[in-house]
Image (tube, helix red, strand yellow):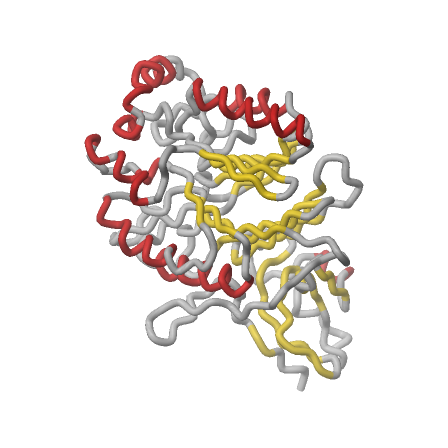
Length: 392
């Protein structure tokens, strides 16, 4: 008999139901990392899109409440410093907000919201300003200063037709923008654009950060990369040019494009989180750790684990991606070169582990390269929860 491996429960994923509510994954306490270098920790969610509707086109609306519950429990257990909701907390209708906000209000730290297209979907024109009140927003965009960092929460719905009731003073600019979109790959009505006044505000913030030596993270529901992607802001190119002019611009962090992505353009990191609602049995959220020489994206569920160097840093990038959709049980060839190896994140979280049964040398290992949370370890025996797998 070979070893009996304990686990199989996916950390941060499965909706572990006991009394009908989702249960949070076991949390590993973390503290200062890399010696005396303390990180700032930010919880991230994107595209929960809760509403009381049946699943449709691969979107699982109702169970987003359980996924939000799980994410909130994780952020509380991990004691993150703040949480940023990257937009589309609901899918449609003002009636969806009370239940979604009930989960958000359980957070034991400040939470900041950015506006997405679904915030306004099926909300009457004359009631759209109430969305900002529900989310505690005095304005669609704002800034937050942290030690060495400046965070900009942006409003990508400035010029969108679906949000005109929340931006009544921008209607002329919005109509001119939308009339110029013919031939653009991202001209779909569910995207948006940042108006001139907000663009000028962003440039002032970046210039101030350049002068003060701060690093800037920009959070927006809508990505601005990859260039020409059908889910980007209508004025994506203008924003990429703006960021390239300022050495303080470190990363643009978004949602909206539910598959998620990561690219580096002109020394700026572009991270798009996977959509929380896009699976019947898995979650997607992250904790972003800001360190002096890197950013660590601790992905949960379908969100990858990444270590990304900041500008001027010589640290190596690390990227562990979710499993491919094809043949998810097939073991990639890379596993044969990673047996009995473990990779530990700067926070002591085991994010890579692979072994084979010691008495089954003639067989290929059953564990694959990927992300694991080690629950216990004794005499070579690991109890683990599998999170993600390296790609082929």
